[in-house]
Image 1 (cartoon, protein in one colour):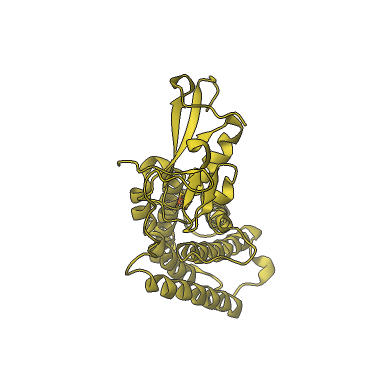
Image 2 (cartoon, chains in turn purple, red):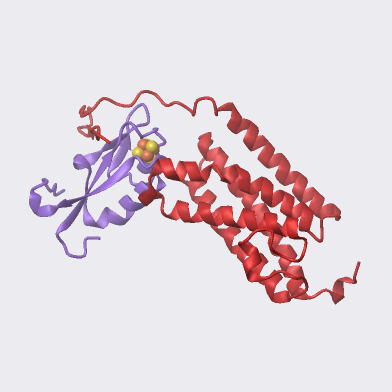
Length: 84
Length: 205
Ligand code: SF4
């Protein structure tokens, strides 16, 4: 995935497809929390730190409607990397 | 009937693996429907249901593999490797073994489409996954029709239990078939909440 070190990953929820199952938030609480209606809210604009990439993948796979997308973004393209 | 001891261990394994596979298919179906209905056991996370559904399905596939392999290797009856996937070609109980092949083919299609779900997309996956509702009854008829044990009380009890489980699941599923459980309206795009997290933005697709 991020073998070359230039690939960063971002999560995005397709709100049309999302059925509010909330599985994603259980599997990736580091980045996803649910709003009052059970729909996901993404932290840091969905940016996935490398150490959470495997968990992000698992969360995307678990989504019953495949509404959670993993997007490759070039780190150099300037998506603000939030450093905690 | 022959004496128990005179039956080859391989043939017994075939029968055992078949029954276990059928039990696992039943479990898989019940959990799958429960997932659609969004049932949740208290104290269990929601993803657990889906995870067990997938594991049980995979395990069923393994037991079907053992079931097929022991049948062919035993050589007690005229069933070849190809008869496991090509329906109605076996010399032994052609129709009922053939149904087993049909169920196996569907199971393979379900497993492969499940693994490729991200690639083929939700719509295609879902269309294929409806075939699960055909897989189980076909496996049931195969079990009853082919099973050397189908006259025995214990297998009838197992079959009755499985039928009751799936019947309950299907009835519950039909209840939500008219409209799939409709969630509240999707959130508006880009709104920022009090927690400072932004909602997912709409993706044009
Ligand atoms: S698991 Fe999928 S459907 Fe459920 S809340 Fe997350 S994105 Fe939405």
